[in-house]
Amino acid sequence: MPRGIPKSGRRDRHERWRPVAAVPEDKINHPKHYNQGKFETVEIIDDICQFYHGEEGAALGHALTYLGRAPHKGEKMQDLLKAQWWVNHLIEVAQKRNGRVDQEASES
Image (cartoon, rainbow, N blue to C red; front, side, top):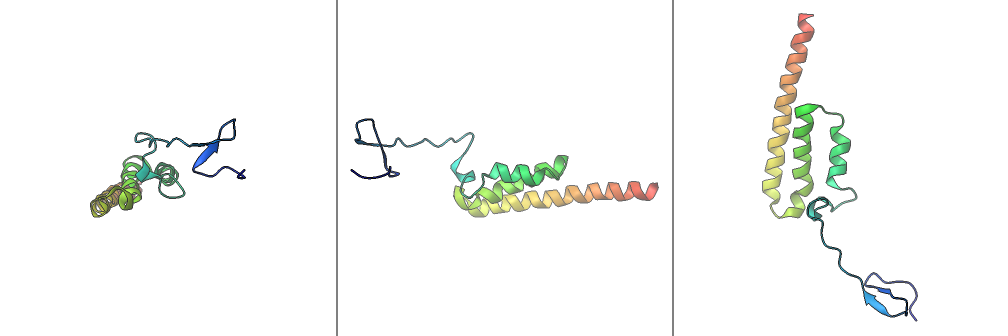
């Protein structure tokens, strides 16, 4: 009798091998193209974006989403260009915010 349980099957109570049912992809909560590395993309976004506020955090989150899925969804260049657009938007938002902060500091 074989030892252990191979990935391709499990033993039932009569020690016969039966196939393991394929787990369907959860396209809503955990799509495959966001789960290809050690971490799910949403975990990375949550961890990094906690240090950004408002529109900056949203822009960064969008950029990270496109970067994370680019090599896995089938439209790599399109996703990279979308990420670039969001990074440029993040820079614009940060520059405007920094301009307001710099202006407020000089008025004090």
